[in-house]
Image 1 (cartoon, rainbow, N blue to C red):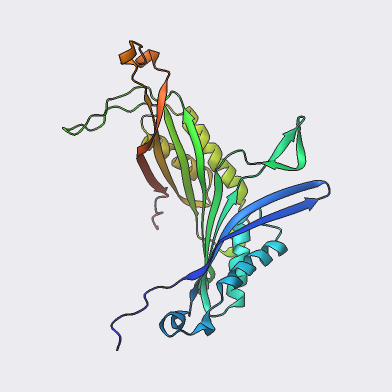
Image 2: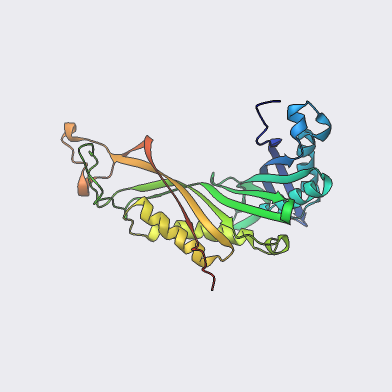
Length: 299
């Protein structure tokens, strides 16, 4: 008898790139995605006995994404499009028990030419992306959705301080009452469990837009005591505004900008005269947190 067992297994197709063009008269819309479809189920023998009869090929996974994109009116709504794929997989393959779809939506913004939006030309005016991960479980028809905003680069030149922190013999960081604050926002939000029909009714696009709005407004307007304090205000505001969200996580690397030392040239580039900085990529601070709703006590 073998002393080992296959504890977990999952496979599928990654980095499936899709461009879908919607045409409504003269107006066209371009949607570019990078997709991953992975499967779990009664596939153990493909690993332990070389039995390929249980394998839905990764090429089939790729083709499934393209065919569903051809049929779908929701490619632009990535959470709904992902659910369409998972529903098809569980309906088509009875031995597959879990289907996971991860989608990255790349940014294409409509060009403005002579003051008017162009009907069919676009520009990538930022590297931030929308993301979602949808996991669909056959048991209980359970669907988990985690969406996100990643790569939103922000910077403010004042309105940020950092002082009063713990100090010991290893501390060299000086306290500051005014500093540059910059970060690349990586935010994810997990939706409350709900039936598939209810999940389809969520305005996912509006939630994404508002998460970005809250993130930017809080970042800009908060008289920041620390990255941690500003992050928590973002999370609290998102949960207060969106009942469909169960928890919000942020990963905020602290992108440092240090004043250039010009003392050797008898030039004062300190305090009120500080206006020339050196961007420093690493090492960098890294602040993360997840904020969730408190469990509601049962009466």
